Length: 465
Image (cartoon, rainbow, N blue to C red; front, side, top):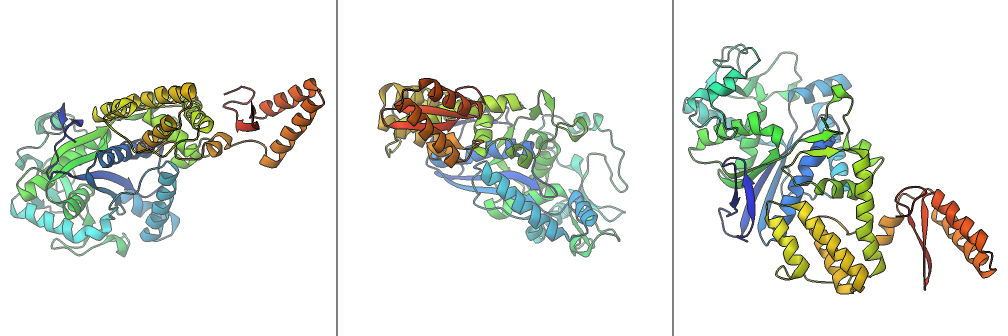
């Protein structure tokens, strides 16, 4: 277990991973604010930490994985009002959509998936502790704010002092804030907000601020100090910085041992943005590409690196994934138990232990697929499938993957295969070649063997895989 090294955003270095409790890992990842369909940035983050979760489990750790849901927030309230439905109706709908999209990408279900609205009492308790310590104040407008400059360690995650952060502040001080860096812990209720967006508190009716939600849920489910906290690079400041200030301010000791952040997602080299017209939901991309190809595509980039999304790269990824499935289609995999000390498995482990280096792990899979193609070993094929499974790949029946998305129905294809066989039997090879080409032009590639003819969907129409 001790061979795993992870880059800690807090210390800015790669360090050996040592859990607080031997053999057990407590992992928290910031989840989705559920007011709309999940987008590809959400896919990037959640796939990154799905791999972290899977590898920790494969390494023998007992992992408690918490991925929260933010189900109360300004955007949620506005969207529910726009649609004329309740907040709960909106959030239930979006959570169900999120689960469908995540399942299509092979993202595993976490141990706990708490909804923020179920943890308001815990949030109020932390806010009370902060107020008692002088770290929070009840502003004239009714909000309760965190007094950032009274927390000595503020800025340690972002690597900037409050003065440096203040220099970059472009937003005017809100009414009641003593400092632009101060942030809201409890939002005072507005008269025109729906009743379901209001909770009673010692400071009057209102609702929690975004940052306090994660401090409360992580503490309730993982304890006041836990092993790993993850999220996108965009959450490093201010969200995660504020979580540290809240939790360490309230409890008086370190909050998280190791912070992980995945790199940004770009679309054709530019940051994804609705204003640039390059914004894509997971659902939209799934209309063109299957979930496993999207997953494989994203794992080709190490989680901390910037990720560039494009249709061309996705096409290339699917073609590469087909090569792995083609090896498994040619040689039926045997059932194997992975021995992490030997051969390809040891190389795979070395890559994953190096800060979850998925590109290195995938390279091992391709080397192993080449070995399967050369030696036709069922044990090697079994190892290929088992190692792929650690990354959430290669678990479909090979034929199902290779034939998926064909433009013709199976009956029509089989009829053409039979017609071609009849033409060959009659020694009409020109007709047999015509049928093969006609199918290939429709995206169907025929594969002849001693046992007969089978077919797969061609990687590109008119081209062989």
